[in-house]
Every structure is written in C-alpha cells, then in structure tokens.
Length: 320
Image (tube, rainbow, N blue to C red; front, side, top):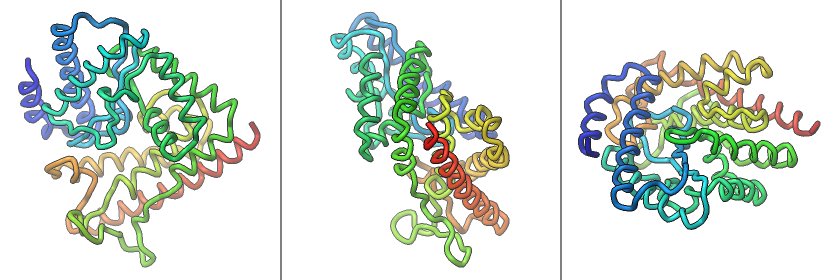
C-alpha cells in the first residue's frame, strides 16, 4: 500500500465516523500506516534503523482531540548518539511528506519530526525540556506545553515517560515555574459580549463565524494540562486527565461530562468543514437558538473552570 492508497482509505472512511472517539481512532490508524510506510522507504534507501526510537504525537493529535481535518504535530525520541540524528531527521522528512500526501497539512510552526528541535536522543530531549523550563520565555514555555501534550504512536513508550519524569522532578524543585506556565495560557478569548451575545469574527475570511478552539476548548485543555503537570499525570488526552485527577480535585467532576459533550458538539459542526482552516470555526447562522445556549454554557463553564484551577494551583504551589 502506498501513500495514495492510504489517502483513499482515509477519504472513504473519514465521513463515516459517528462520534469523536471513532474519528480519532481512525486518525491513529491512518497515521500509523503512513509512518510504517515511511519507515520502510527510509530503510530501503538508508539501511536499518540505527537505534530504538519512538515516534510521538503532540497537540490535538497527542490529546486524541483531532477534528475531521488536522495538521501535523509530532517528534522522534531515539536511544542513541548525535551521529544517528541524521538518519532520524531523514525519517522525519519522509513522515512529513507522507502525511501531507495522505491529507495532514504541515504544521505552520514547524512542530514536526523533520525539524532538528523535535527529533532528539533521550539525553538531548531531557536537556531540551529542562532548558525550556529554565528560560521561562513565552516561546520556550509554549514549546514546552506543546511537548507535554504528547503520546507515543509507534515505538518505545518508556522513552517519553522518562522525559516526563525529568519534567516532574524539575517542577517539584522549581514550583515558581508553575505561575509562569499559568501566565502563558492566562488569556481566554471572549466568546460572549456584554449583552450576552456570541462574538463571531468581525472581518476576514471567517467573518460571522465563532472560533470554538480559542473561545471554548482552550480553557478546559489548559486547565487540565496545568493540573497534569503539577500532579505528575502522564496521559495526554484531556478526558484521561479529568478521570485521573477528579479524586484529588472533586470540583472537576461537573466539568468532565461538559467537556465530553463539547467534543461531540464540535464533532457535529466540524463535519461540514472543507479544509483545516475551517475546522475550528462554526458559522453563527448554522446555530439554532438551543445550540447558541449550549455553546454559551460551554464558554461560561470553561472560563469558570480555568479561574478555579488557577486559584487552586497558586495556593498549592505556595505550600511547596
């Protein structure tokens, strides 16, 4: 099977998925087939893989929260030395090309295994995450937060787990970093106006449409990521983070089912998107009165969740 055949398989099945969970299982299947093919191609041209490695996903793919269209966010960890990096960068380039053919746009921010920053040995990854946390610049913490939403798709699971342990150790030793991480995501784009009206884009191609990602999803995703970082929870999907943390934070329980239904709400409207750019937007005119009320409830509760999480973490960190 070549990349074109995998693309055809994706196109034949993508619209048949009936819920958010099934859709993300299909994405995993398609991406895994693509990566396996890329590995085979590089092995034929460059020889066998020189070291054990893991190919991991980040961002919405890492969290299993992709929509019908998705871009690429991924990296490679290998257990070897600097000389072997060239091989894995070539593999990364082949993976990027393959995924693009299959239907996944290249990441605008270049968070891909073809880039030197996102393909490293275990030791260099450990140095990299520590450097990001030490620098605490807006950009370095953004890279760190992107990396933290990661899970292995193919290869050795324990490489990524090892790097996350380095992160947890650093955070425990430097609790002041947590307030910088909070500041990094402490902006919730307003989706509701002073008169209780939904606020769509005012100009440009998406005029009259609501960005559900920035106004609605982000407060839930950012809240649970921050709690996962401070509680040494390694799983990336937001739903798993809710499940793992609600015993310690009982207030999370009321938001978990809301977030689950928000994912299904997004799934319902994203099916109509014809490209990656459109997938995070919902035209206001498509929403019924009850849809609008539902969306406002998700927005209000997300903002409430983030505020409560922020206060909880600031109190906790002051005691460390």
